[in-house]
Image 1 (cartoon, rainbow, N blue to C red):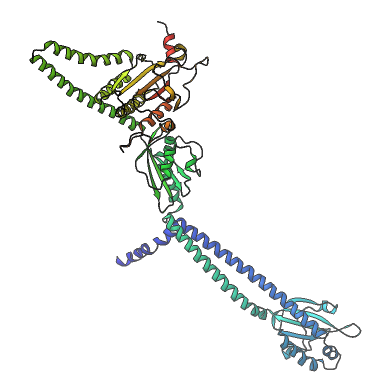
Image 2: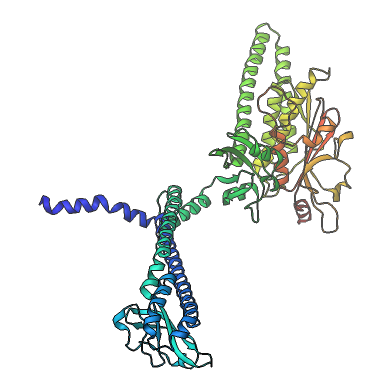
Length: 591
């Protein structure tokens, strides 16, 4: 049994490598290239041999022709052919000429073809083997003929007397064996060059394919094709955006998720990343020398988390993007809820203090003062609640205003709602999501409260934030007047999606107006264009501010609205969101 299995093991040990080599793309290319190189070298060698053989044979014909003419024109030959014993004179002469010229034979014969001379003396007196008809006619021709010395290239030429008559014939030839001997040297050199070229081509092909095999990891065409298909399917199915850049920061690959997150369209391959129309902060982060880790950026409509890394040793860069829009909105809501919780805790603590004060007044017998103190606090709290509930029927806005008012009060800032504020329930369009409302108004109020607190340190005025929330319909309000709080000398500066739209007769459509004013230091007119850029902030505490107003501008653009920056006692920020004629529809409905 061991004898029968030994060959099997040997085959399994030695044959997998060649099969793997041939199966791989590099191995197949190697075989094809070796065959091509061998065919080219062999074809070149054959053509070179044929060319050399033809030239050698032509040179031989020219050589024997010139020797034949020289012998036929020799005075010795002319005088000897008319003598009584031509052989005695011509045999020593032509043999000397034959040895000097290196031809195979020189035969002088009479007009009947009987030899007078020959390298083999026994052939003298016998008939010449070959054609002499054209020589008798006065012509000189060459032929390849098999004679007494074997196949040879020969020439027969006439010998003329003084009266221009053919009196004898001269034949000079070179055997094919001697011609082949002349070709042996060039042929060996040609074979050596061919073998060297084949070896050099094979070695170069092997080295090139070894490098290719390393780069393709020994995979065959089918494996590479499947790998490419898997690669494409994976890239276009993942939810994360992926962009590959080359050394010159040109796009090499951009999957579907990246196109959607960045709002990119058209052909992107080869385009520089700086020319894709992306936000400046995002482009700066992508092109920066330092890799970025989980950095939040804003696009036109989305919040994305950016990561970058370098490919190899500077081959390019990998950019990954994650959609953070929903998570950012949830984080904002969570911050609001956390703020509400902290405010409720503070109010509970404050209520406990007030209750102790009321109990102490009762124990001291000051019942009237206790009742007055308790009802005054209740009336103050209820007044703001009644004002918000009466003016704002939209539950999301009402809850947000009450929560922010409690937070502001806890921080020592008075938040008031202007008298002209009014939003009925159901007025807002279905496309305006509650999250966008929270993003817009929540961030505006948070920034205003911070600004009011910062301004209170440099001003005797108590910190205050004024909020206006109402439906603005120029068709009924009489144009742009009646906005309540004016934008002051800084109005009109802003960022957004342009005008809120026009009605059927050219008049502007109704829109939701959200305006927040504070008593802070205001916004420097020179910084108005940077207010809504990610990272801009007046706070210097190093806590990563500068995202709130950028989110406000993004939410306004997403809903087709505008954001304006103005100035009154402090900063005034106004958001207008189009309602697409819903107010007119409601007012035109039958009662």
